Length: 336
Image (cartoon, rainbow, N blue to C red; front, side, top):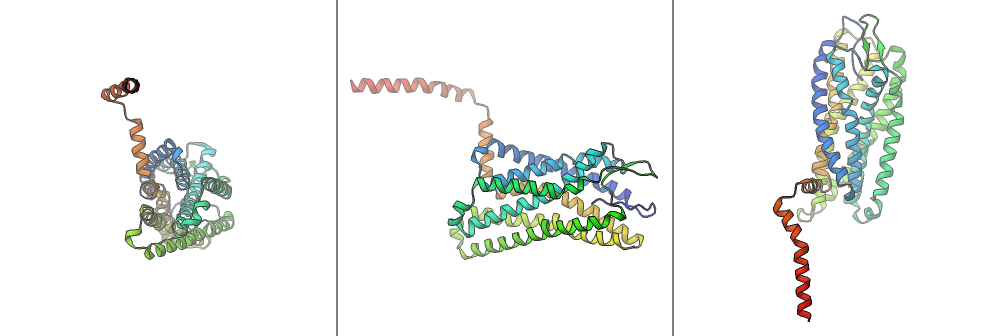
């Protein structure tokens, strides 16, 4: 929820016009390059798909859809809060933020859960973790998040009567606060607290299982599990947790009359935590590279497949049929 107070004497217009273009531009470039590369590798090597790779592919797709809307936000804040792209794109830009945020949380939760099952219950996981189940979970996550985020499609662009600027991403009116609070607490419990608890339980079980095994018995999948724990925990601590805590406090302050200084402080914290929440899509390529199954091998395979064949290699390839014929002829003569 972007922030700007209606009062002309208590506004952070200048602050957010400086911070958002920088943070969103960095997020857009890093997210586009990182997730675009990952998506290319996963699609080109799709025949090697696993359940974990399906979750990562969908996570990368979610990130890319979101970063494609960030240039619109950058332009909006560069022009001091003036929207040029029509009501439809205003609604879509707001909508994709929340779709990406909660798709990321649910896909990370699914990856953590299935990695936990694979390590803690390795025998049972053979039949439990399948591509078919992974596809079903991915479809369910997309449908659930897109439907539950649909209320954010309701509010589109508006025209400010004082400045005559077209506005987007602005705070709700007072008569909408009650409805927004209900949506917030549902999202907080279902979309953040519950996944966080599931991830915490899964990681506790994984760590406990790894500690029971000696270092000599730990294979590559265990190392990837440790990387997953570190990266997902980092994303939650940096991106998701500050945003949800701040949003809860901010909604509370909107219902109560606070001093201008308190409102300014709260609005600036919105800018910071929302930027951190958007930055979650830049952490995901680290998850693919360090925690993905054979992702680096996939990159190597793709690079070899796309490498041009040298003249010497072409000559060797063209000679192989001749060599085969000569060898077969020699065998026939020997038999005679």
